[in-house]
Image 1 (tube, helix red, strand yellow):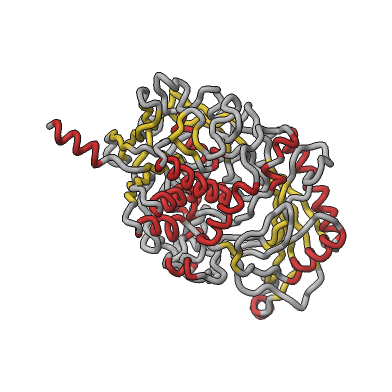
Image 2 (cartoon, one colour; image 1 turned 90 degrees about the vertical axis):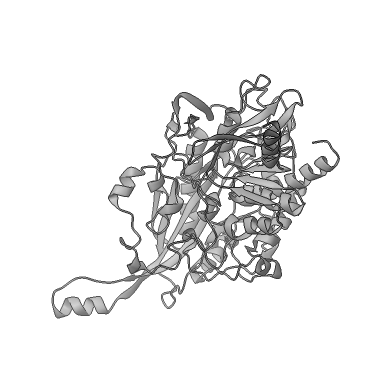
Length: 570
C-alpha cells in the first residue's frame, strides 16, 4: 500500500502547475512547456477544443432559433451575464451562468466570466495596445497608487515576444503615449474616420485618431501557419470561436502549441480550492483541487505555481489558501491581499451624425475600430481629476427603409431603400484609481457549489470617475462639433463596475513588501515559488486594454522562474 501511495503522489507531481487556461494562463503554459517543464494546467470549466467545440461558428442567421437574439427567459436567468454586449444566442454557451456560480455583490458589480478551457480568450474584444512609460511612471508621478517596480523598457522585449507569436494588426503611429509594436498590416479607417483624424490632429496638438491595434492575422507569418492558423476573414463572428484561428485565443494558439511539446497535461473541470503551503520548506508545494463532476478533493504538486485564474478568482484562491504561516491568505503578510481593486470606466458614450461623404458607404466588415489614445494629463497634470481616458471612434452608414403607405406604395418603399447620414460614435475607456476601499473578501456564510466561500465584491466609482466622465463629454463634444458633426448626444449608462470586463488588482506588484504583494518578477514577496501574472497583479490600470500586458508579463515571469529553478533558487 505504501508503494501505491508513493506512486500516486509521483503521478500527481509536475515541474510546474498553471491555474487557469485563459489568455495569461495559456501563455504561462506555452512558455513553461517550451522550456522543457512538465506542466499541469488546471481549468475549472469544461474542455473546449479549437474548431470542434465551436457549435455556431458557421451557422447562418436563419439557422439560429431566435435569429441571434437571446430569449427573455435566458436573460431573466442571467441578469449579470445578460448585460454583456457579447452575450447572444450564438455565443451564450461560452458565458458562465449566473446562478451556477454565485458571488456576493456587497456593491453592484457585474462580473462577466467564461469558465472553460480558453476562458475569456474566446470572448475578448481583441484590442491590444501597449502601455507606455507614462502609464508605468504614472503612480509615482501622481501618487494615486504604489509605484510600479518595472518600467516600459523592462517589458518592451516581452511585448515584442508575444506580439510576434500572437499576430497583432496595427499601424506604426509613432506616438510616445502608445508605443509601436511588431505589427502585421493594419486594418483601415474609413473615409469619415480619416476625415475626423485629419480634423482632430490639425486642431489639437497631442490628440490622435488611429486604427486600433488588434490580435487578428491580417497577413499570417510562418509562425502563425505553424500554429495551424490562417488569415482573418473579417467575419466579425469572433465570439463564436474562429475556425480559421484568425484571431488569437488560447484555444487556437498557445495551448495547442504547448501540447505539441509533449510536456502539457491539461485538466478541465478542476476547481482550485487553495494552494498548499509547506511550513517546513517555506514555499508552496502544490495545489488542492475539487473535481467539478465527482466533487472529489485531490492534490497536485510542483515546485513552481503560476496563478492565472482571472483577476478576481486569483484573489479568491489566494485568500482561501490559509495556513499557520499565512492565516489571512497566501503571501498576505501586510493584509493588503484583495484590496486596491480597480477597473476601466466605460459609462460615457457620445454619438452624432455627419452629412458629408454622401457618395460613399461602408462595405464589408472590420473586426476593430478607430482609437483615440489618452490625451488628458499625459505630460503634466492639467485637469481637476487624476489620469485620463482613451476612446473608441467609429463611423458607418445605415440603410433607411420606409414602411409607409399601403399596397403598391408600401411595396415600392420597401424595395427602394436609401442610405442615411453617416453616424459616428465613441465610448470612454477611463482609468480608475486603485483604492483600499475597493476590495474583495470571502463570505464564509455563503458557499459556492463546491463548498468554497463565495467571493464578496465591494467595488464602486468615486468622484474622480464622475469628473472624468464630464470631461469626456465636454472634450468629445467639442471635437465632434469642430469636425462638423451634428445631432450630438451624450449618454451616461450608469452601468455598474465589472461590465467593462477589465477588473484588475488585489495582488499588486511593487518594490516594498509592506505595500505590495508581488515583486518585479510577479512572484509573491513572501512565497518565492508562486507567481501571479493575470489581471490581479496590476498596480494601476492605465487606459489601454490590458490583455497584451498580461501576456507579456506572463512570458517574462516564466523566463525568470525557469532560470531561478535551474539555479536551484526555487
